[in-house]
Image 1 (cartoon, helix red, strand yellow):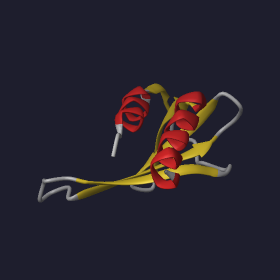
Image 2 (tube, helix red, strand yellow):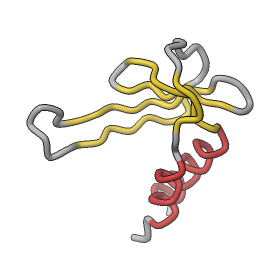
Image 3 (cartoon, helix red, strand yellow):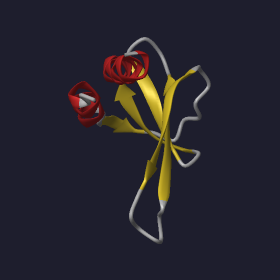
Image 4 (spheres, helix red, strand yellow):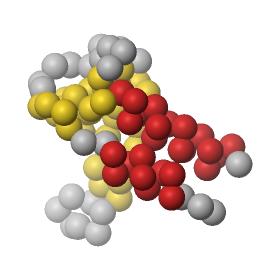
Length: 85
């Protein structure tokens, strides 16, 4: 299975600014990352549409930052390509 597009899309997710605004719009995608760390065995990340340009990244239920929505769309498309192919 080729996951290069997924890796690339995930790498592009960077905070454009930090925020504590609550997510009010539709969830675009959520991921659970399992870590080899006994203090933090997993992290849940949700990306919620804020507007046409940004999504709010929510980590373990807490809003953290704004992320460029086009990068979130790229991530959704990469995941869909893996799941549907």
